[in-house]
Amino acid sequence: MQYKVFVDGQEGTTGLKIFEYLSKLSDIEILRIDSDKRKDTEERSKFLNGADIVFLCLPDSAAKESIALVKNEKTRIINASTVFRTDKNWVYGLPELKNQRDLIRGASRVSVPGCHATGFILTVRPLIEAGILQNDYPVTCYSVTGYSGAGRSGIEEYENSSLAAAKKLNVPRHYALQLNHKHLPEMKMYSGLLYEPLFTPVKANYAQGIAMSVPLISRNLPKKSSAKDVHEVLSAYFESERFVRVMPYDSGDYLDDGHFMISECNNTNRLDIFVFGQNDKITIISRYDNLGKGASGAAIQNMNLMLGFDEGNSLAG
Ligand SMILES: NC(=O)C1=CN([C@@H]2O[C@H](COP(=O)(O)OP(=O)(O)OC[C@H]3O[C@@H](n4cnc5c(N)ncnc54)[C@H](OP(=O)(O)O)[C@@H]3O)[C@@H](O)[C@H]2O)C=CC1
Ligand SMILES: CC(=O)N[C@@H](CCC(=O)OP(=O)(O)O)C(=O)O
Image (cartoon, rainbow, N blue to C red; front, side, top):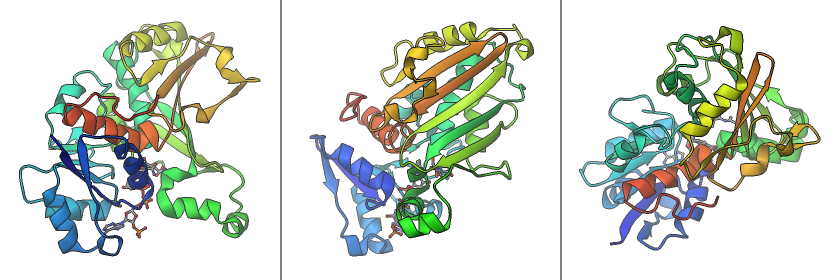
């Protein structure tokens, strides 16, 4: 059977990447809207209602508009935007969480997790489930990310050399310093924490790749668990996962002269988790491609599950 697939937002950063993946698949027919009609409501409505699967790769307001245009029971939506990620009528598209795969397989509305949220939830949730992190722990976290996470306008800002020079974009920049980043609600809801973490992202002068770090202190954990205990729990949780690897404990082998390499998962759908420890200090780092497991790769992985395809169809790594 050939499934009809429409990418609303086909010319944006996540849309283009989704197209790259889709072009490697044979059991689907890609519906392409004319470039000059891609913002025409009537035309979009035809495409949205004619598809079996729709990817929404749009700003939040346009994504909401598209969802309202779908008037039939058949069209299943995979939404990359922030809206509805914590809505009970939508399934959160993070298959590596226990019991989530079956929900995704049967869902008609799936939201793709935010890029920062992906690494955070995958490290914190298993620890809470195992009882080695209490759900009221005052969690802090920070991520270092490439600029492509900010979409077309963010990319243009960094890649236009005179603008980048004028804005001094050659150095890393903290942002969301009001401590209200838009991913906090989903980070809280799907990690199982009672309170939002204190999260400070840093955007740097490179295109792709995220490292999300979560530090913990053993003496403040209920069982005084060590970094090795944390590593064991995470290794067991993700043992049979194809796209999530827990790397050997405290391994300097994966560092370059003592430095962490953020971009090693780029252009794959992989997410690597590292645990480092010293006395009662623990740090967990997850690294992945913000355009891979952080967005378009995850969107395709969800589509594969929803259509009963092999979960890794067309996904590198
Ligand atoms: N980049 C990333 O790493 C991630 C992005 N996301 C989310 O995915 C969504 C898309 O992001 P991204 O691809 O980066 O954004 P981009 O800005 O790169 O692309 C958005 C696309 O949507 C088009 N568009 C805007 N308004 C409309 C409309 N009314 N009708 C049809 N098309 C429209 C834009 O066209 P034009 O440029 O002509 O306005 C553009 O092609 C966002 O919600 C974002 O938050 C999620 C995870 C990660
Ligand atoms: C570098 C950068 O600006 N990244 C974006 C998030 C990218 C992402 O995951 O986006 P959505 O939640 O919009 O889907 C940010 O931190 O706001």
